Image: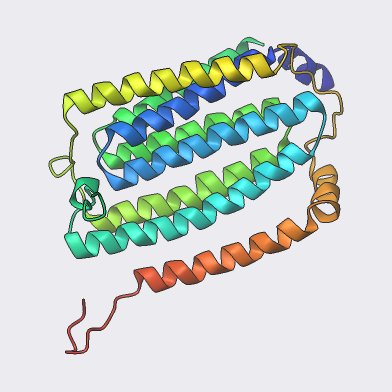
Length: 109
Length: 169
């Protein structure tokens, strides 16, 4: 089993960074190009996960468990954020009967 | 080593499908697959605690919440709002610029030696628990207050308000 992990772990750090950056950018593109509030929310989750992955990779790279504890905190925060955010989306849908974010432009100017 | 590239390819593919799928339900399903590939990344890093927590919290709790709200809202493909093509194009260009900037900066900040697991027990529950309950005890307790306030907030927000004239709004 140890040998398995050592074989796997010969991946350069740059490739992990590139993977996380790509996932994060996909999340940003999703926020910028979609109008459905729930899909925007899912893109935010994607960004959080990209950061989590990079934190775990750096934790292994530096041999420091603090990074993985931080990932744990980010997950707790994400759970709270999803609960409140989805409640807000349900309320927006109840008041406007759509979840198109372009309807919510009262605070825009 | 090649298993990493295969899983990384799958992660990126499913992430792209999340933001391009027309139907929001398909988006959620692709998001579950993306989270599953990220769980596999954690297992490859021997971060077993994070893999299990990612599996339970993200793929279990959060995705059920998303699917549940989607089914409550009764959406379909016809009512799906679409942005104009020029906004989409600008969004993609902006995202690619962000990717170049982020990767360039992070690449400069770190030397690219291989990621080698020095301590096999780094990501195990025993090791992480010691760190969590010694160095990070106060943040851990504060996060419990955060979760409580989030629960109260969600219940308050989603509750139907009764208007003075008796109409349920």
